[in-house]
Image (cartoon, rainbow, N blue to C red; front, side, top):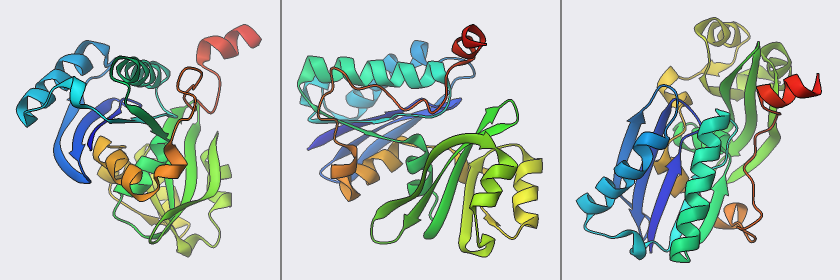
Length: 224
């Protein structure tokens, strides 16, 4: 079954193609602001290099956030549009789950992304033969997150966050992975759809929306 996976929730997006559980190709998108101008051409290039056409897609897996509001919206819109055009099944997983799954760690893993304004997006997972959620995705100050990670020695942090925060977690006794482990990847989404497909299946794609976790800056300003 040919599967397209995409995640543009952070400044480094990625696209991957998988066939029957095997990774065929993956491409990273080094885009600093928005991904829309590079995602579609790169999808076309990936299909061409793998010898397939978009009409061959049977599953689409998307990173549903949290992260960049623009990036998350782009991935969601592309996934829904491709699904409508091809009839493929749609699956969506938190970009934080993709970080945890791709970290290479086992046991209790906290995935975190810089949410700015002194906050992080984070979620906790137990990784063994499967994946279960220890706590739901949140947006909160880093000190509040560290208070969740008890006992600290049992937790591994996979995080794309400023270095002072990583050092703070290490001083608290948390096992902190290298920064590269804190980026969500499309290949990790392929892994998740093979590992826990029931957790990601979108049963009503027409009305599905990604998981932003908090309101956008514009929405917060209007509300305030």
